[in-house]
Image 1 (cartoon, helix red, strand yellow):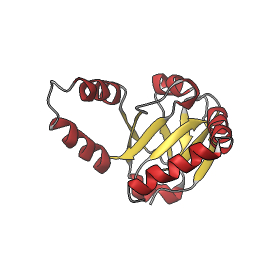
Image 2 (cartoon, rainbow, N blue to C red; image 1 turned 90 degrees about the vertical axis):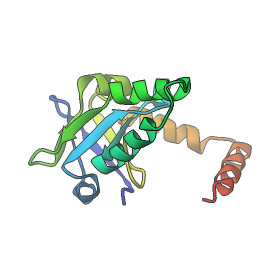
Image 3 (cartoon, rainbow, N blue to C red; image 1 turned 135 degrees about the horizontal axis):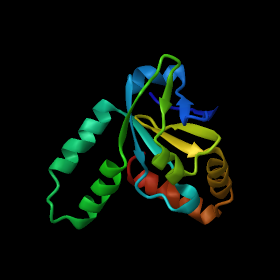
Length: 152
């Protein structure tokens, strides 16, 4: 299971280290694409094993071309997706356009999300955490109620 968080530097070539404990779950090739909802400081990258990517592809294949929302989501996901192979040191090369989208320059935060990972700019991750911590009690209660409704 992909969980926990790790801070790693992105080298001059745009490579980032993938923690050893995640490599078995992610495999030798990791699909990296942009998040689906990112705005401004909340932009990040998604990383997933080929098996999860193939499940997503199959779901999208069943979507009618007349479903405008799904087609727009597909464009963002597929146009920005890249298959990144682990090198011998356990690093992947993050494509320049994806690093630029997520604002990842020097330091990155890798966040385990059960079956995928998120890769954030360390600065943007810190801002996201501060916003979450300072959210109103009402918002936190609404979030917990929403999760309960999902059965989580």
